[in-house]
Length: 223
Ligand SMILES: C[S@@+](CC[C@H](N)C(=O)[O-])C[C@H]1O[C@@H](n2cnc3c(N)ncnc32)[C@H](O)[C@@H]1O
Image 1 (tube, rainbow, N blue to C red):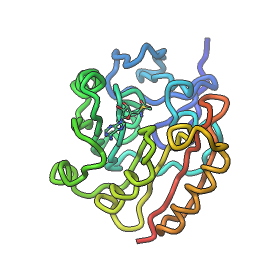
Image 2: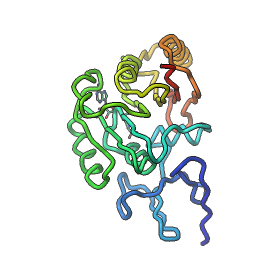
Image 3: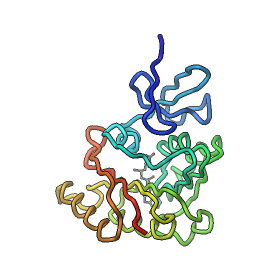
Image 4: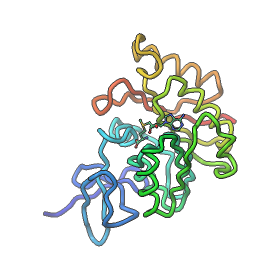
């Protein structure tokens, strides 16, 4: 079979229409994803049902702020599924992965062990002062924590760690904020609050059919 490869964003590819990243760690799978060997390179399929960032790309996002040289602060890295794809993209950057569940962190450590650009941090994202000295300033803040107070976590981390005029990707889970309110209403309130806090909304996409009641937002910091 002859493979057809196309590329939309740096280090992301479509292999026969399947979204992939080039494997930074050839031969290794992170979550049982398919691997494709093509002309000496290995590509990992990126499952939008397992990764909200893949879902955001497939929902038509036009600008992905993560490039090969980007330093990323990733809040809510869990067991490293999405973080591993970010690591495939930002090959020359650093990905600081904050996670507070000891169980997920154990898996995250295994993933980071095989990748030289992932830095796992066992911490609570509501206490940035504790991991500040490890992180410094970053180009992109990525957050996916499914907590009631998720917007506050994003804002305090953006204030602490984002370089001026840089970008954030925020995955909002409406049901974690208020299960009684319509997701649309919650998304509207979050967008208003982000604007009020000086973040410019570049893009917003709901993540259906991959994930229910989620909004993926790409912001640019105005300071
Ligand atoms: C939806 S999962 C993240 C999935 C992951 N982003 C991925 O795509 O591979 C949310 C994660 O956020 C973590 N989390 C929630 N609140 C947190 C906090 N205050 N500090 C650190 N991690 C937190 C949870 O333990 C969980 O692993």
